[in-house]
Image 1 (cartoon, rainbow, N blue to C red):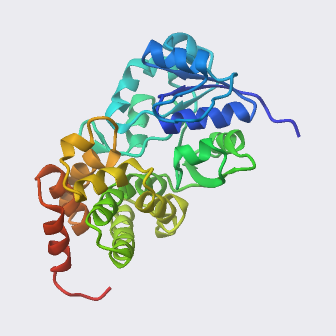
Image 2: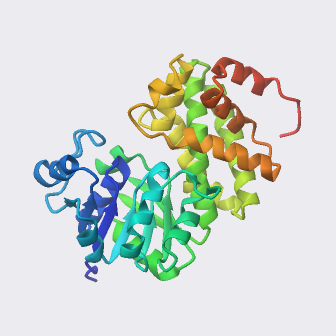
Length: 330
């Protein structure tokens, strides 16, 4: 059966939205990336690359970029949001242009807007008439852009748009599963970033594989505890968007959150290691700690990551504090 060809606008020029745009073009769709700078637009259109975030990757010649938001959105059938959480509020300027069009959100961080919100909660407020689909999974952009096999999960309350995005993105090296648990899929992608920073700290301190295994296991417990209280299913956190993403983020030097943690463990300052790239777990850790306190949820690893980043706690002291907690059953 011949696949339907859609016109898709991708917002964001980071590694992950650019990779998703690449997949969509390779799957036969017309894709335009909305770029915020003319240099980025010209690099994609003329040099067919985004070398800063995807070094060595040649983008399809059919992939186009534009700085004209009105034209880009007016011609699109579907929208892909690839903005980092700290920039997601920029969508408010485009709300009248995209409201009503199905949106796939790639954002993996909490939004500080009238209190902390998941990306889908903010989008529902910003574009109330748009069907929303969220995507999360163990998806290191460089590997997928290089056509290495991977899988992800998309979730929505609306079956039609979710199935449409599943068909648009799936191919022989990128497998897309569906879920009706938007909370679980989003929270898995959000919380694993915090654990990725903690994992990097462990490697920066050279604490070994046992410590890493302990972190991943107990980190998943924290992620599940928090997410279930928000309405997520435990099974979702055991899947690709929870455990799967946690494994990838906690073990890959290509993960920005892991890289931030490793640098902190090696003694570098947070200002130094976050000056050139966005690591979602940095700001998200504070928002999750605040929300956990309000909800009465115990999240010791998350709290220590927050203290290392925002209160200058020595990573070694953070590990000692975690190891010295009151003994209990698993």
